[in-house]
Length: 147
Ligand SMILES: [Zn+2]
Image (tube, rainbow, N blue to C red; front, side, top):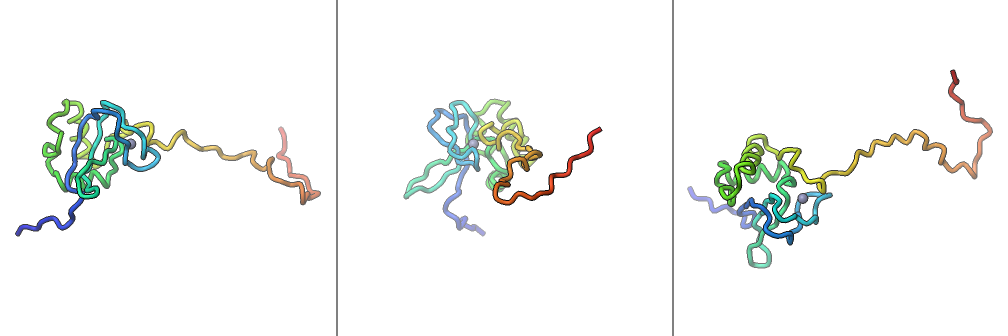
């Protein structure tokens, strides 16, 4: 039974080292739009754009588990991934590992894809800045007992 893959787009994937830094990452925010630097490992999806096929690139580190899952459905054997055989052993090992684990290694996620430094300010003295100009209550704040 041949089922000709009803969906036209999302045909193929390719993985390679970026040959130039022309492509912008199509991965999720906050990395989306960041230029992929020459020599960085990147993953391309073939998309149909106004009648011709083109690639949408993203950093290898911006391949989400969902995308990786789709890639695996298309290419259960990682060796079948377009471009894979041209990569160095180190890169091949990275990709094989991701195939097995279902996500890319944390160390491969580019800085541009991270959410930035931890924002764990706990606003402890925020109440000093409350606008109390209009309604000032007479009762002073209770002070903590000092030792
Ligand atoms: Zn990216």
